[in-house]
Structure formats: structure tokens, C-alpha cells
Length: 168
Image (tube, rainbow, N blue to C red; front, side, top):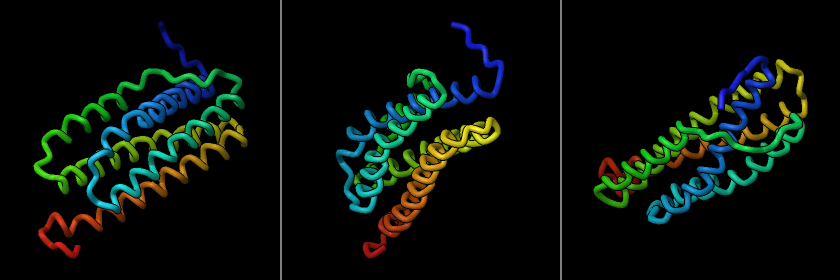
């Protein structure tokens, strides 16, 4: 199927469909990865991130409603590869602490990637004058940015353990 993006609305819908697919893929991928988390700080932020995926999906469905298009995802190959890479690299963790660090950094990478996508979608919606869509995307972007801060805080909490400092 050939895709033709002839205007900014088409580009916005295309971008949003990828983000929608990404959120749905993450919602399925996080629980199996999170099963062996040892650090309470990491568990808390990963659980919060997982819980927020459902809210982001609902907001995206409302966005699609405003755009009068079906809330369907398009295959998001980059997200699939990021999730596959996360699962692959987790197998090499020498211990539970390293597994926590690897999982946290992989989810941070995914989060940064999604922040960029949501920022672009927000810029498109602002340019198109879609105030309701912009408001919904702003909410999602704020959640992603807050998650980014929480990931950074969790990284600081577990970094001392990696350096051999049991009190870090």
C-alpha cells in the first residue's frame, strides 16, 4: 500500500498512527520485562510508565476522533526494533542490578524517542490550528516529560549501587 502525505494533516495522522502503535506495543512489552526488577525506584517508574500508556492511548483515540479518522496504528518498525533490542540486551545482564540499569536505560531511550514524536505532532497540530488536538498532545507530552524526569531520578538512585556504594 502506497502512502501519500500531501498535506500537514496527512503527516500528522501518519505520525500519530505510529505513536498509537508504539504505545500499544509498549503496553504489551513492559510487563514481561518488568518481572525481575530488583530496585524499588526502578519498579516505581516503570510501573508508572506502564500505567500511563493506557491513558495515552485514550488521549490518542480522542485525537483521532477530532481528526475524524480511525484510531488505528501503523506498524512502527523503529519501536519494534527498540523493544526487541531491549529484550535482547536484557539477556546479557550479569546480575539483577545490571538488569535494572539496562531496562531503565532502554525505556529511557524509548521515552526520548516518543518525546520527539509527540513534540512534532504537537507542532503540526498547532500549525493546523487544532486547539483540542494540541491540548491532548500537550497532556501526553507532559506525561512523557515527567516520566523522563522520574527515569533520571531513578538512575541517580541506582548509580551508587553500580559504583559499589551500597548506600548510593
